[in-house]
Image (tube, rainbow over all chains, first blue to last red; front, side, top):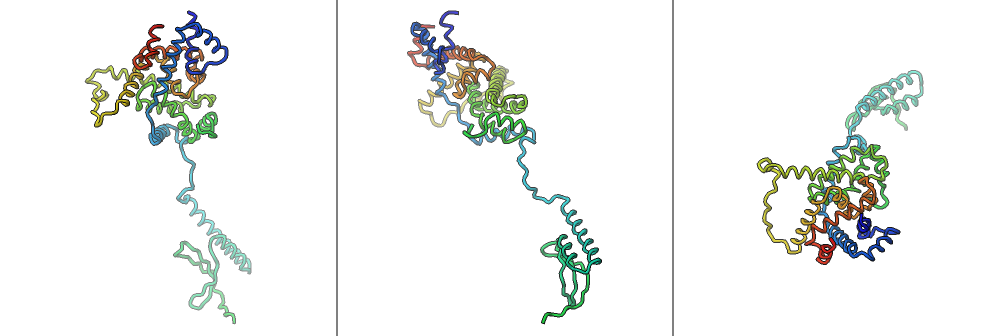
Length: 170
Length: 201
């Protein structure tokens, strides 16, 4: 290896401004007495400058976005799944559970009503089943019934007792 | 990478755990530099985009094998540059196919431009073609180093890590690549530089 060959890599680094320390001192010392290496340094700078002036063609955001979509399709589904939002449909078990809860509440209410003279217990339990106990007046006869709203337009009524007619307050 | 955003180590760790958003952020952070390397190696925008896409797909598929997430960029660029070299070889083979078997791939005759581009644009285009032609004639290893450095975003150390070679080898390959480019682009370089080079060659 000639003396100049030992400086080839350093010439590239010096052209890029990436040389420092002892290596740079050694190169500059060599360049002081070597016209050929000074020319080679100019060459390195000229080619580096030429390449740096060439920008790649632009790529738009939409193009990158489309590329990402294609890449994402190759990933396992679990890696690209978005966080789940609340389901739009009610889970299949919800209506059945509500019906069961309502039935249970009715049974409890009936059982409690037989063993207790107080209307407070049955009323509370009936409310837990999304129903309401109300005094109803039909054909001027009053009775107690449980109203179960099935929709805003419809309600089911379970007759419980035909109570004595109450006197209107005077 | 945007200032203040998660660094590569964190993104790689999250991606390895299955976080889809982390994959997207890795793509967003490194797609430009990957494209610059691929474009410099291939000289064609569409081919470069295809290689970048392929490089990301391969990198993400093998992400579990990447130990240190901080080295993601170097690792990705190594994959992309290898894919670009493979792509070039395949492209060269396609061009060597008999004409009757390659009608679909044959470049068509360019439609005449409706309006002639200005002289400066023509000169720029000719220069770009000359540079690409010179790059095409470099050995693969020198071209890869030159392409990575020409992105303006990689240090010698990062290139050395990406290619798994000593930093001295990076400098040496860079030197020889530029020397060869100077010979091939003598007409386009500063006349003074070219003339001096001829005397010392």
